[in-house]
Image (cartoon, rainbow, N blue to C red; front, top):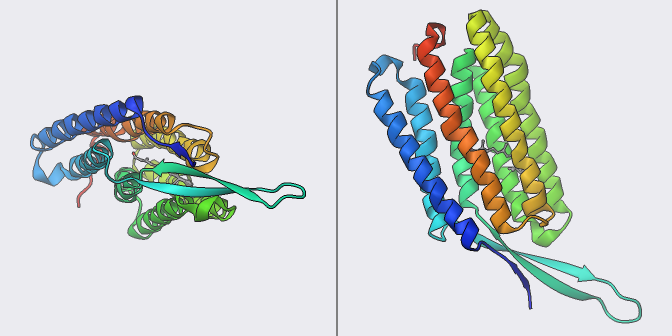
Length: 251
Ligand code: RET
């Protein structure tokens, strides 16, 4: 009999709660965008799309879709008798990766516009980010639990370092060129982003990686991070954008 690792009551409830939070955030951000002139709506549009994608993804997960079981075969070797295997079937919510593949580029776009990054740097950061998410997806369904999955994980982490590089080096330099206030705000919200984002690969390591965190624990951990990375990030960005005219983008 395989060991089944899947969502239970607490996990499922959490998915619904976050779904509702994402819907409310989307409504607030969309309503807010109508109150600013069309030419100043870019951050509002990007930020609203982020929570709309998240709401769709959470709806899928809460209704039991966007998920699949990863079958891990664990081999046990014994002396004198043939090897035996046991199986772990762990639920993986691949809907998350679809969400992240769309929303993390949009979050980076928000930060890039804020800093005033040029097109080449924006594209590089976003491509590295998409590579990070897709290789993370390969890691999650990693080859029946073989060490190869940590290979994919390593590639994803390297791609993540490229993303951070763009924010820390290019982002800060460009933001400083805009104004002192923009530089300060970029440092704060960029630092917040790096802290929150870095928690994802850590949670992953205990959840899909080592499988020591239960599926419910994983859902709750990602729920907290998703709320920080999307609605809280968005609120902070839009409120501050309204206060600092140099954050305006003419696009
Ligand atoms: C994975 C596993 C492989 C290694 C790395 C990861 C990084 C994920 C990140 C996700 C960020 C998500 C956000 C979501 C929405 O709000 C794919 C977990 C480095 C950084 C911000």
